[in-house]
Image 1 (cartoon, helix red, strand yellow):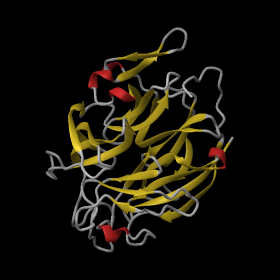
Image 2 (cartoon, helix red, strand yellow):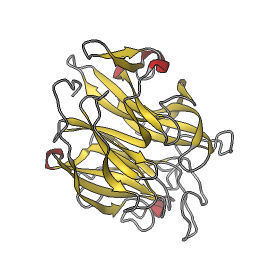
Image 3 (tube, helix red, strand yellow):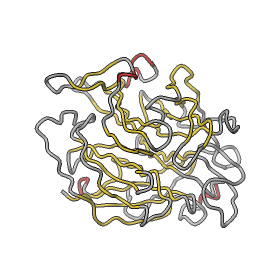
Image 4 (cartoon, one colour):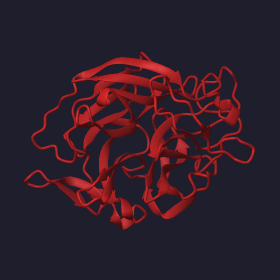
Length: 345
């Protein structure tokens, strides 16, 4: 899983790409308007026991029927749904959403909602560690031109009560010009039964490349415990630095909303992301730091206009990992959809 030496690329392409179902919105089988979720996006996933949490971005309770993109009333910067549905083949049935006393999905990480100060707080991914839940989020200062925005910082919130309440970890932040504003984490068990969490990160917006950091699970709340991939030594072994400024780019592309998982069918890493203006693509990695193969089209912008945020979860596969399932956001109707694809060796 961590050693790419002697391996070769296996992924030749994808087939059978199909939209299975709509996950959110009034037109979805989940009828999420009952939670005050008429429009939302993103949908990164993380697992806690037999429950999977879906983490959504800016969420709106009422919208004009013809409205495209974000906007509307009852704005929350982030919401979370959850499920114990283990069969992804026919879509995902949400068991519920983390809600307030009235049953409406509540905002978990607060934001000022003030442009050029803190417009919103968007969770880029969640994870479970040490018996708690963590949300990594970005504080957005201002939305700019398409695919561009400015961040104040990336931060972390923690919940010890199954997501009902969240505490901001003010000591754990990355500055707004960091390459770790948006992240995708993956937990890797070590030989001594300790575990490390790897994070693939990109800057704010959709025009930067991917860098890599890791932290022992036990030290996830300690900023000084994070290490940054700084290249390889003469034997090809990874070099880790305490300084984020020394991090090396492992995928040089225009990367938006990335997702990385281990795939048992290929026995390789898989990365999906939005390649702005073209569509969502997939790459195969021989080790967390690479090398990473060429980008392969997963869903093109011509097939699904306004698409973004292709998030995977290794719980949702079939045929030993040959079939993968993923969320995909569509700007029109500004909701999250459920897709599948078959990997071709």
